[in-house]
Length: 310
Image (spheres, one colour):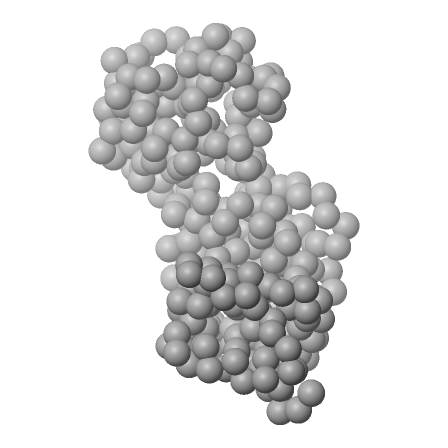
């Protein structure tokens, strides 16, 4: 094997992940023809094919699957060398790959990114929004540096730092404004709208209502909090959303918001990263900025909600 470059390995990894030349090229910020040329040259250097080309996507060959495992280890080691050099700096600099779950991203990311870039202009922030299990996997593989999720994740290899506790609120049709707030037992008898399986927020809502994780027939699933709130506005049922989402998701929906009084449901929001990360010290500094940003965003959301209610 001759003339294999680190750049080719990164392109290979992108294509192995996306299984599509166009999406892989976009992720690497190069043209699709350039991606094709680099992959072809890599295969020629190896003397064997790594991908089976299809009309719409590509698949890894047997060699490609074995190659992918070793490439990930190589790239993670290279990235950790770069992180080790960055960790010697007093202030966080360079690339920061941060993941976030969908029930946090739209409501906290603008404040977090704004504060981080203002306080640490040397940071190059890359954001990835996906479900918790995917974020954990990408953290473990070295694809992400840190993630903002609901705790606990209970992964021995990851450090967890709690940032704040946030309550859930009940979203009902506008006509229900002022009615008594139902407890968990009453909610179980209602048409409850929840996020589809895979979202940790769904499991938290089910736990509050003391419902099994298996999908009961009377529940309806949505792909986003926005979809759930709009369905409530159409009179289809009721739902729970995190308090930080209220200003964004209810501004154009005919719904009412109610707070649970006794033992309200809540979640702990925190940051996670690999215990072995060379950037652990800097990530702890960043977590404090994220905590302040999240607290400020939550306070602002609560103030807007009080103003709207008044």
